[in-house]
Length: 445
Image (cartoon, rainbow, N blue to C red):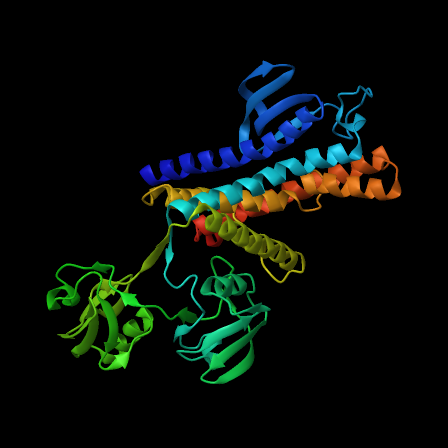
């Protein structure tokens, strides 16, 4: 129950801030140009509470799935008087600025939040921003079938040269069942390959089956388990088992399963000194699966604290990268190369917000807010009527043809778009339910 409440409260805070910032962008631009704002609402539907000031109804409404700023004479479905404070009475360039101000505020917020995270405490896996050197290849995976081996370096993927592991993971995630062009350095050779990622059955994202080369630094020891009993300590680096170099935690796991209950020689480094331990694994059972274990975890992280200029530059680079990724994902969805199940709705956002809120410190939640804000800004720029991008597109068309589009045509466009968005949200929420309750699909008629 506590986890549920944390998730709900976290989602309310995250979405509330995102929506408030977005709508404030429209509101501030409208006020600046002298457009009358009738309603500033957080949420849709029935008005729950609020206040009126200077002709504007500031309200909180019943459905907390968005918000809106209602400007006088804005909608083609309402009558206009031609008053100078109506939206349509202003030049197209001013209407363009008002329309783009909301998404722009979300993008600015994403840059600001991520800059703050990079300055204060950016904690991430040690491999994430490192060159993409392969530490392990899962059996029967697309990587194994493409003859990828330990120690190979991915030097190009889908047009990105010298990618980090973050670049590689993002490219693979948005390409399930779609061939990806990869160049791999094997020794002194550069091998060009075309690999088709598998689709993860739950999240519908791509997976190739290669794992990063990273230090096996012990971050947690289980009491009364062989590793702790033998004298290994948190912070030790496991570099070899039975004389074989280990480049990934999964390589240790794989060797232990093959070795069974026989003792292993573990080579570890502590404060620059190499030590050897003879340890006998124990067999444990979890989720009906038996495995041989030593009893330690390795999830090493790196913490960045950058000065403002470096943090800002890195934030701009990251937001640019993720913006292009979002656009690419939308394109692949339209081409039906990627499933819409990758989209997260309110339930997915609540789950992610709750997870971030439970982590120590504020930076995990701020980082999530930055990503959601960027997504909201980019999504609203899509050329779909009703959304800001649709308004912008119609204004550009009108500027090109040098006249307003017929009101009846606009009415039909907005009505069609409204039905489309309604269906879209229904599908996203349905997908959310399927992810949150995996057995639900089998129980539905």
